[in-house]
Length: 139
Image (tube, rainbow, N blue to C red):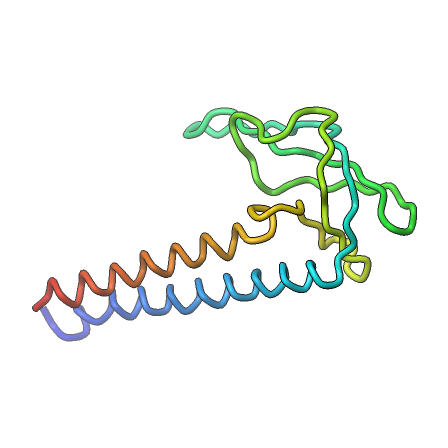
């Protein structure tokens, strides 16, 4: 095996680590900014949108109606689907709303704010483990 064939997987994993860290850090910064400038609003689950996935079955994500600080009725649809549903119809949910960026809304809890940063950090650790396995296995 040539040196290039050995280095290619390591290079791929290293680039994956870099991108995971960048994406995770950017999302973390967005969450911190939202905590600083965001306005807490209360929303109500008005619908559970179902998505069918042949691997995971039917999953549900909440469609939340809330009133922004300017008195405008708005809708937020979570980008996270779960089974069983994480929320129930009519349930009240705390949101953070950025008045400067109308589309920047997140559910105001730990998972709602930091899930992408956590996944990216976990992926980086997995990629690093892959590099270590390749490096130490080739010796």
